[in-house]
Image 1 (cartoon, rainbow, N blue to C red):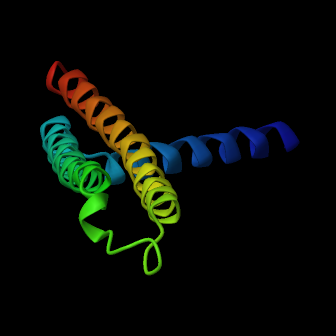
Image 2: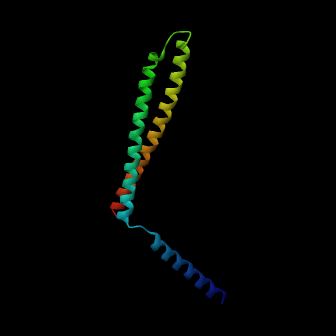
Image 3: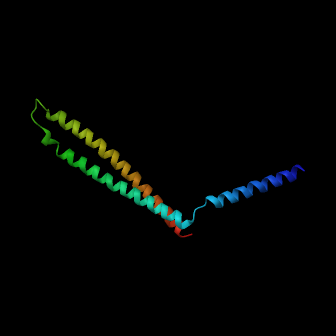
Length: 117
């Protein structure tokens, strides 16, 4: 009797798993399209970061135009503050850009794998 109960329970669990797996499984073409959309989104985010990086690289080059005189804006203090500000933003955005591009590549790979199925 105990063995029969275990068999019935096992069959019930396996049937439940099979049914739930089919209910939540997406079509490969639909999942591939979603992966491609995510890849495009991450590529766009990476491109937007290029603008932020370029803006701060230019800002770093142009810091001199904010110099009034040594009493108002001491050159060394202005240079250090601007350089630290821009370098931190450039570094953080370059790292984030790499993460976005890596994830875009991952989504593209997943889409290709799904399209082959």
